[in-house]
Length: 188
Image (cartoon, rainbow, N blue to C red; front, side, top):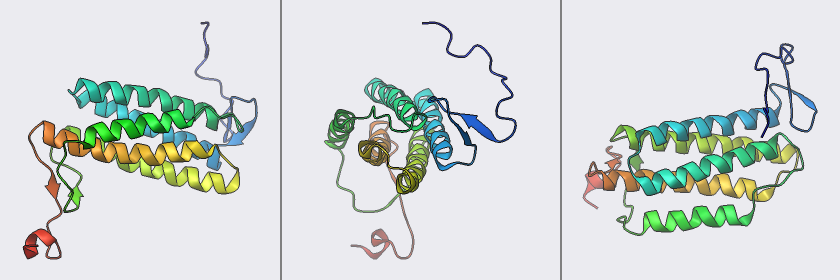
């Protein structure tokens, strides 16, 4: 494959627009460009998680997801393009089932923290939710591939379960919400 980008400094965005893969230009504060940034940030946060994660199966899953997120970026920078299919969503659902199989039932809200890797996973989950909100807003303006929004929604579920799974695998346990309103404090 030849060079995709021979020059990094192009100066073409100096006046507040950015080039899309279809050749069009959009304002840097355009909803579609905003979503591209959110998906890029999510991918970068998954890179942080991968740098902390020792679980090889989870690493493999997240690495595949990083590639999926590039496919979503390709969809976003080429309006009308549809790359994400139901197979992508099914793969996430299968991973969720595997990760969730050995976890105890959830009886209380979990605080994002415990260990650096669990905190990083939960941060990735919140970035994913933000990306999802942006995609929903963009879909209200310009119809997107409906599978893409489902994929991002399912990805946030996977990240929540992955955080729980890692807390159990590393023995740190989950950090539960503890307030005067918490069921744990009321003895329920």
